[in-house]
Length: 193
Image 1: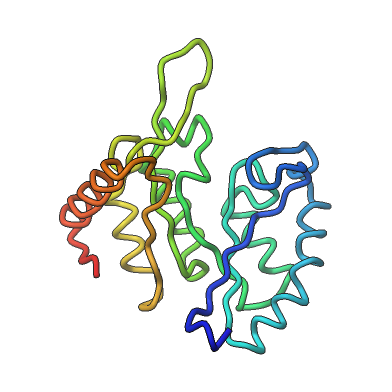
Image 2: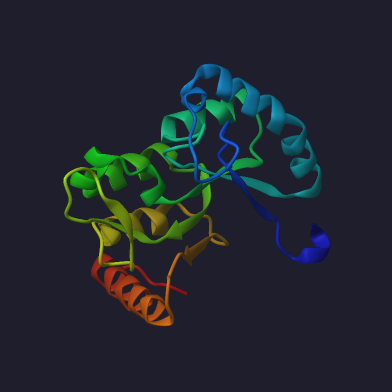
């Protein structure tokens, strides 16, 4: 890792579904799943410590690590400061969270303060329909309270932490997302480097 110049490795949040990240499985939500994830990560975390690397788990609502609390439980089971979170607010969004994005940002960021070293930013929006229709949207076109989130990121991300705009489907979506991110940062009184 020293040869790469980058010490952060982002990992999936664990999943019994064969698809990996995108699918889900009922066993993902069990204590046994957290125990298995901790056993799988223990040696990797020791290796990361040896090389000065950080293993970043990216929680996702459908995976084993699907809440801030489950991440903290996993970190405690692994027992390594080399295990950190890659914070992606949208990955925590349930229907209730979509209805209360400011409270969700506060809860997630406060619970994980000191435990995340990178953040991914994108957005989710509700679409009309008979049942739940939630999909990605350009950053700023969804429900996320970015000024609130960015205040927490500015306070809690390490000085060498990254905020990465992701999942822009077109170049225009990327430009719009970046403009909206800069506007949210200005509203939050946060400087983006």
